[in-house]
Length: 360
Figure: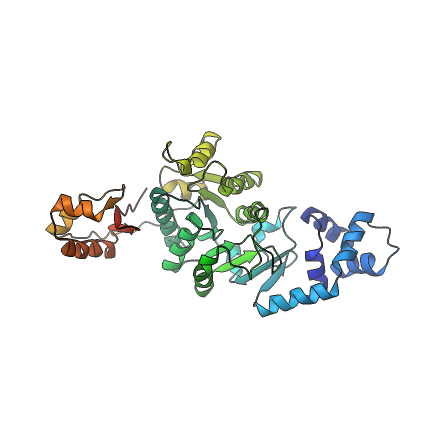
């Protein structure tokens, strides 16, 4: 990264305008000379010329460069091979991306974005885990926005399965938002993932940044999956951007009485693909789902079977399980733990348990 690239990146011009400038002036140094040094340039309109001259603030450029170095942030511009190829094709693609971690893998294999509600339900959590686990087994990259709820869940599943995930932020890379996702931020990087932003370091997570961020999520992806979304969810913006970009969108149908299913059900009504089975995803990607030849069946003891039969996809509290099975609470904890270790059930907050549905 040089001063000219950073100058052009921070210039307050639309990405479409920047792309046209690059085409007309061939390279940034030439554009810089014609706009900043040659004050009599008549090749640019007055407004564009003013913006480019104002952006050439050496003190500001040096400050941003220092922040980039201090926070160990990398940069890539649209003319470089490392720049995500799926994003390059759009007129409004950012000229420069700031990133940490392994960005190269975004140009390999398939990218699927999974987005959803911050206020997700147990149903959304379970479905997200099932989808993510299947994609991880098939070595498919998962992209999301590191927000609370569904986004965080899919990132965490990738980390647990040692699979690649990329988080796209609506702030500068030196600002972790939400703050309680600092550990997740670090774990993504520790496990060879990537964190990307088009915003310069120091940019706060303003609300108007996220619709812009969502277009990057969809632009990087071959397929967008929406798990849960409220009536005004940002996930709907991601889905809308994906459709504008010519990407396939698949939505998870939900309970018509759930506020977190209003958005996904509306997407389906408007023509999005509906997720009825995990195979629907692979059909849209035009690839085969990896099948295990041997499925290991857990042999349950009698007491485990007694407990397991009362646990289904609707959360049940441990007190209710104890009452229905008449098993001592201390022993019951032991049985429940064993069922969890064998991935037969999932523990939810508040001592609730649900069946681990291994296929949709």
